[in-house]
Image 1 (spheres, rainbow, N blue to C red):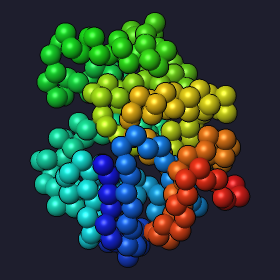
Image 2: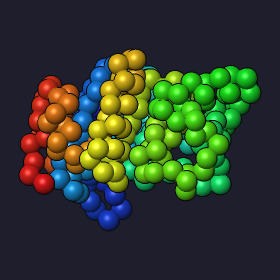
Image 3: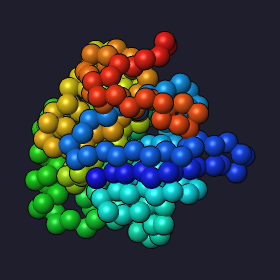
Image 4: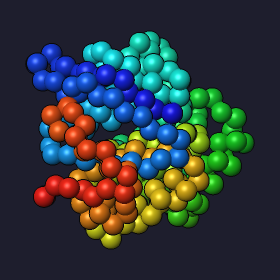
Length: 228
């Protein structure tokens, strides 16, 4: 599914954000990525969808080695991966329906299929009734639901979430986590970087702790393990 083999990432300024990472994620897993600020979590996440390229080693996603993947092949990789960001990254001039549909339009899906699939995922995230509203008319939680709908509309095998509850209040964060739980229950792999100690300690899943570009803990049903 996803595998890293002896992965290093060194930035031009000399910072080593990945220092020999080796790990494997299986289909259908739900894993948290935790660790202090500057530990290398964001680099770890970004290498999985080729926002960052490993300096050396192998990053294999669905049989593709991302270390040697050509730039022109990246769009094909990202058709198989959904990404959810802390700041939503919605297109402000498009309404809810159009923001979600855009993910299918860029891969030239048939219009009838787009209409059917977009309304299905908006129903799943509870926003079918707000399909014609624009991002600035929505709450933060609703915007994140649109972001999640967009990430799953093309039925990816894996969703990568980078601090998806970071800008949300506690009650809304739990609503979003329940949504991720439902998506995972349908067979989608979820890999989530988070600082939310309460969520990690309540919804017990696999926990991978990263410090100094190294995996220092990999525990099924683990706890957050850091004071915040």
